[in-house]
Amino acid sequence: MNNLVEENLNTVRKQIELACLAANRKPEEVELLLATKTVPLEKLQTAMQAGAILFGENKAQELRGKFPLMEQYNKVEWQFIGHLQTNKVKDVIKYVTLIHSVDRLKLGQVLHNQLVKENRTMNILVQVNTSYEESKFGVAPEQAIELVEQLAQYETLRIKGLMTIGKLGATNEETRHCFRLLKSLQSEIKERNIANVEMKELSMGMSGDFVAAIQEGATIVRVGTSVFGERYLPDSYYWDESKGD
Ligand SMILES: *Cc1c(COP(=O)(O)O)cnc(C)c1O
Image (cartoon, rainbow, N blue to C red; front, side, top):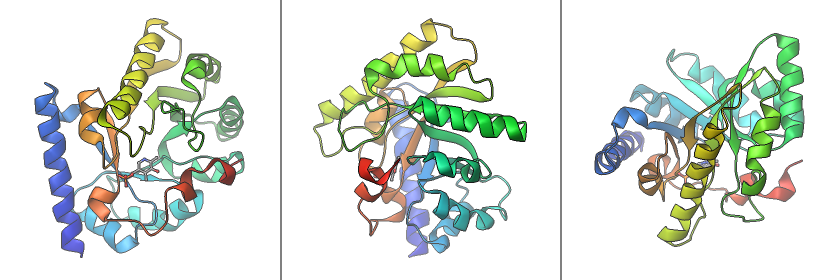
């Protein structure tokens, strides 16, 4: 089973490389983040031994459970990709180097207050709901720029870019539309030259659509199933609006 994880990892790496070449991009421009929700420690360890560096978790509790393993691998980094409840902020920032899912001002405010207390900063991405699906988190595209401007006022938050989940089970064209929308928002925000906003990163693309995302400009792809196999919990458990705050 664990050899399979390594084999899958190598296949995905190869696919990323080919997608970059096809899109006339350098493979170093795209980072592979492994999405590890529900994945057992054993498989994680295999991925770490095979040289995987970036890992993403959706829930504070799972992150806490998996963190000790990571400490044995000094290059490994955790990032947070799930819906972040304000009461979990203090816990989550102990472990991660980047939060992909900042999607409301209130969350920015709570993050800022906690970071001030701890006298530190945090890298964040702003999550945009480019598919307009009600079940998904993320700020509406029309409100994304305003949110970035508001968040930029919190000097502890280093805004590095945008994140989205493309429309799932949709046509290739519909999914690409999500990625293009994110890319165009990135360009618009860049043009505004907002202080404290970098906009270098585009976190988009999952197992089913990372090749398309790379063609549309992704700098971080978040892959779970293609490396670790099918999950036993449906994604709605992690993404459903009714489960959040
Ligand atoms: C689970 C998850 C992924 C990975 O999804 P796969 O389809 O398994 O590759 C990526 N991003 C987020 C936010 C996720 O929750």
